[in-house]
Each structure stands twice: as structure tokens, then as C-alpha cells.
Image (tube, rainbow, N blue to C red; front, side):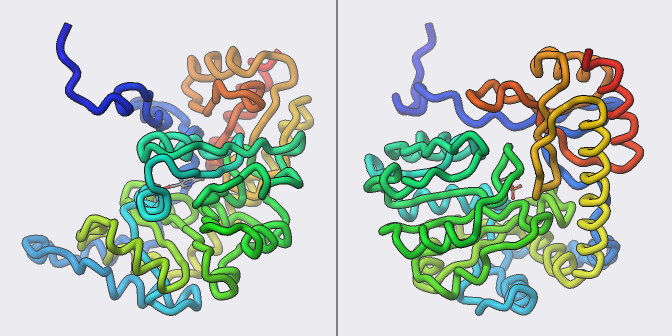
Length: 350
Ligand SMILES: *Cc1c(COP(=O)(O)O)cnc(C)c1O
């Protein structure tokens, strides 16, 4: 037996399990990437990028990127923090707001990274069970108890639904700690909570370039919050958590809002058509405000169908978690990919 040198609490946990990244000819509908390329402006910026500048450290505050985000999202630059993906920002949040032994509240089922972050930080977990329609229960505040941080994804993953904005506003007003609204999918939704940042001193909204902007490989995220909260989080981040290249590409992507809108509109149209077709096949599809669908198969157990699809080169996501284990989470691909997927579902879900 080799000795294990890691902290006992780290040895005891499994860690986060990301969706598979297979090579070969697969139709990849398992990690909610965008099927379309990023804006051509990102391509131009990449070709024009001064590679020799990589010998120099990046701007630790990512100022040009924050100034650009400030223009696009209408919040002052001191209210913006950049992250190496938004997961980096979520880690910074746990470290900034929750000391070991203190409480961290989050809905369940939701993003499976949240409980892992709690374990890594040694936080006490306050999972809040969503109701039968995957909505927030009436007693969220009671269930959150003495938690220092309440983090929720809106729209939620992997369920795909959103929560009424008025309920969120009430939580922001009444919750005694920080309310973190993870808006990874907000560009695909009917509304968002960015305006709550100016309304409350205890609210942070995070966004990612990984989904709507088609830049999952770049690793870039943004957090918006009261300047005092952002200043505290700044102390916790790696000094150079976003690199020179990512900062430059991020500016190019933000500046092409027209492309973003077109890309999102295409995904939403394919989402609508795919949901309709699946329902015609007899599956149950939950209403989605994201770039994925949560699908209850018509006949076959979800795990079984997941494996059968995988055999044919269709990679979707199955979670062995209570309440969602009967579903498959299917990212929205191109029209052509979804037609092939629907054909396979028609054959295999029986
Ligand atoms: C994809 C996702 C993120 C984070 O993505 P990054 O690639 O780290 O920016 C955060 N929250 C939820 C709910 C997500 O689905």
C-alpha cells in the first residue's frame, strides 16, 4: 500500500466528473457546447494577435475586457471580475464567502459542481430540494438556514427551467448572505437577473463565454456584483487567472453582439423543433430556457438508452442522481445533428 499524502477530506471525496470528451466520429451532445463556431471577429483577432507579447504577463485586472463588458452589460468596471471560465469564479466565491465549517446552500438537482465545491472548501452543505416541477420550494430561506452563500443556476441545469424573477428578487432582499445567480444559460432564456446587481449589495451574477459565445475551449467567465464584493473576491483569485490571449479573444467576442444574437436564435429554433419531434415520438420533454433539453424517453430506461445511443456515436448526458436519473440531457446541436439524433431515438427508444 502506498501512503496517501493528500488531506484526509480530499481523499474522502470523489471530485467533479466532467462530461466525456471522446475522439472519433461522434455527435457530441453531452456538455452543452455551442455547435456553431465563435464570431468571425474572434478569428480575425486570433490571426492579428501579437504572439511575441506572450512573453509578458497579462493584465491582472483584465481592464480592457472589463471595460468592454461594462459597455455591453451596462455595469461599472469595478463591478466586474473576470475568471478562467465561470467555474473559476464559482471557486473564488466559495473561498471568499464561506469559511470551512460554514454553510453553503444550493438547489438540488442542479449543477453537480456545487456540492463538490462545498466539499473542497470544507463547507457545510445545505441542499434545497426543488419541488415536483423543479421549482424553488416556498421555504428556501428556512432550508438555507445560516448559510453564508446561496448559489443557484438560473436557468437551472440539468433541468433546463428557470425560476420566477420575483422569487429571486425576494431571496436577494431576505437572504442574510450572498446570493449568487449562475447565468451560464441566460442568453438562451426569456429574461435575466443582471439588473438585481445594481439593486442589492449582496448579489453576484455570473456569465460564461463557453455556451452562447461558443468559446468553451478558451476558458473565460464574468462575474457582476457590488464593487465591495468584487474587491474582496479579487484578493482570492490567482493574480493572472485570465491570460493575454483569452482577454483579447473575449473583447472580440463581446464586440460582436449581432453574431451572438444570430447564433442564439438558431440554437433556440433547433431547440423548439427538436422538442416537438421528440414529443411526437412519445418522449416527455421539459420546457427549456437553455441550449439543452431534459428528455424522459418514451419506452426505454434512460441509462439503457444512453448506452445504446453511445454505441452509435451519439454522446448525451445521463446523471445517476435522484430525480434526474430517468432523464437524458441532450445538448442542442446543428439542425443536421439533431435530425440524425432524432432518427436514432426513433429506432432505439423502444
Ligand atoms: C457550463 C456551466 C458553467 C461553467 O462554465 P465555464 O465553462 O466554467 O465557464 C457554470 N454553471 C453552469 C450551470 C454551467 O452549466
